[in-house]
Image (cartoon, rainbow over all chains, first blue to last red; front, top):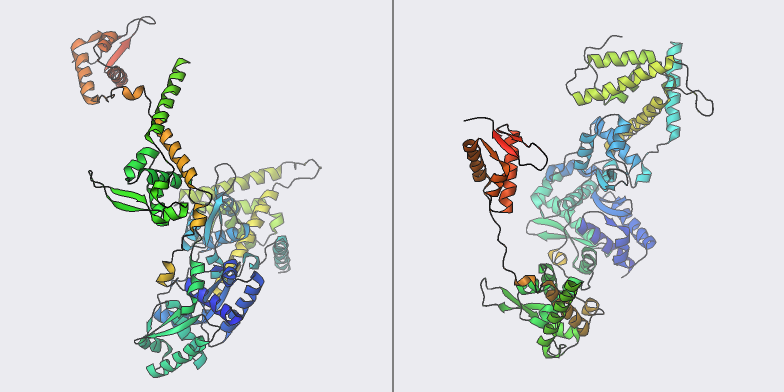
Length: 189
Length: 189
Length: 249
């Protein structure tokens, strides 16, 4: 297999499978190591980058998937049965952000942070396929653990969990400063 | 929409639909007449003709469809097949030994010897081609009879069933006596 | 504080507290607990307690606030290092954590909106690929197995089958299950009670044919006693039990 053929093979696989395919599997089929495969996938990605192309190559964690370019949505709505865009309510988004940043996490842990029962939100997120069960925690009652899915990465346009906006203690400091500034402002008034 | 954008739109539609799409529908979405649309689709076809592409644009009657190129068959098989662990499990071997020595034999007879349902094992052996159906027994319900295949002989390196290690009725009598002795011993204690 | 006519909906007690803190433009690390507690309580008083579950969550926080308020009036507790403990510390931590995730949820919302909507394709593997079956590698399949081993397995199984047959008990006749009609038995005993008024438990049991019937009779007697149809009297331990009908027909 020459390089052109390898790229063609990668394209054919990604096209036929539709869903995301792991890099290791792709590498296995073209009988190359991961790095070489990654390089070939980058070439494929470049090819799709052209204005004449309506599809793009998504990278999700260590998987790849072909999808239509976001700009094509309006045209597609005219012809394809497109899934309706999920409108996430505030409570669902709050729950999702806790799961995204604290995964794996149990219902109880989510509830203790939000201060309210979160069953509805968790169930909605499961229904949307944005979160999934990751197993059970080794704790009394063996509660279920939740984490985000690949669909979550796709919907929020991130390659991997590492690419989520950072959340850290500095942020808390920022909040603090914000609060202080507000007080000073109010005092000045 | 410029030309590039129109080609991209056609590609996105054909990709997302997966199946064949009528030319008239494609023309409608990009707001062009059929001839212009056909011209754009030809360009798309040309693009895929490259060796670096694993997909092609098929023209069927007045419809178009994206599909993997025929040469990609082997690669797709490699990725689609779930690796099978081919090894005979204990239950499968037990079943095979019964069929080998007691053929022709029904499922019920196998089960009565093993003391457990043997459907899974029988089906696995059929799938492996080590046993086959030999007809039906002249008994209520006309149950299927099973026996070993030529492949079985080949795999186990025997020329004919006569070459199977002997098993005689004396041996079974021996087992019976042994069992009786054991029970009598335990009664004495 | 004037309660707005239309109450804003809050995600929960922490959300409401954050709102009050922001509204009053106070430092989250130095919450004026008296003021905030009053406002909080005023708010939940105005809340329409449609859902008791929701309401209870707000009430738990109200209790916490009142608790903190009390502790603030008392001399401050000190920890092992002699540092004064702020009774608000735990609540502040919770509020900050919640605020952080709430903030991140806004970020996520923006990300979702900015991320264009793309479509994926369904799997369309050609049928012959999907139906492809790997050829069977018999060498691998058979592995270490050989005819002698297969023979051993067969012998082992035949022996196991023999072992399962108990040479003594297999000669016994069948044990048949005896069906006892509970309802019929209950009727019989009720009638017995009605006709005998007072009778010996032992006599009744002796009329039963099998162990199962005795058990059923015993159960029915217990039931009749529970429902007050009969009373039971036993003078001394091990004496016969006397049963008396209560509702003389």
